[in-house]
Length: 294
Figure 1 (cartoon, rainbow, N blue to C red):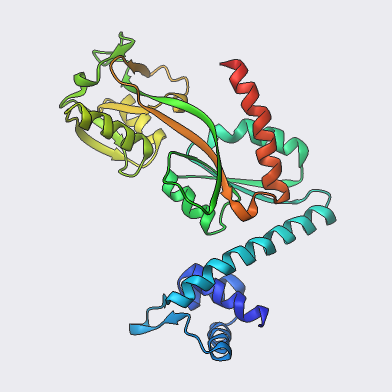
Figure 2 (cartoon, rainbow, N blue to C red):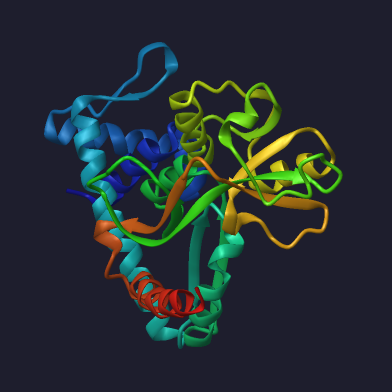
């Protein structure tokens, strides 16, 4: 087995095309094509179907891709270790989070331990973060409730409740709580379908036979807050995702309890990588501090 052939296969499978794989590996496309063909010829297999100029993994290709995911995870861990050992802690660490600002306390402690590590933080909903983890585009993730996945190592970091928010000039702004039924046919600004906040809220309203009037969908909590502040409608959001903002008023629900778990996550095979392990270890200390504060 030639490493270059397996590497080319993995790059094509990961990127979805020979052109993108060549760009990632910084080699000519014919080289990538030839290496994949040699891999297939050597073992008498077909890893891609190439009908109508579109490539798709075959059953054999899908099984091989699961193996190369693990293989190149170990390669990445090796590179991280060598960079850390040779450059006194230099390297890169990638975090994806449903609430990027939520990771800053952990990352502050992380940077004290590894001051030369370059940290990149990206955001998205839980589905996007899961995709990043599986594609090795993030080292760790912070995500909300999700379907169980045997490929992930996760642990609950905290629990927060869903609350309503209104603008400071809204008729409800002087209240501290509302009932879920009061939202029936009210204009609402919501997260996108697929968001855990949206899913939890819709489950509660459906059970109570309440039909809110969704006038706007936005793919970020920040966007929901801004739209509510501008008077577009009532929003729902995780209580800890609401920073101090004099334009907004938080209202708890007095007849429903909607909560979301937040998890730290990584791929199982990456759990003991140097920086991933450090992140989880540091998060335990931050978790204790958070519990004490509450």
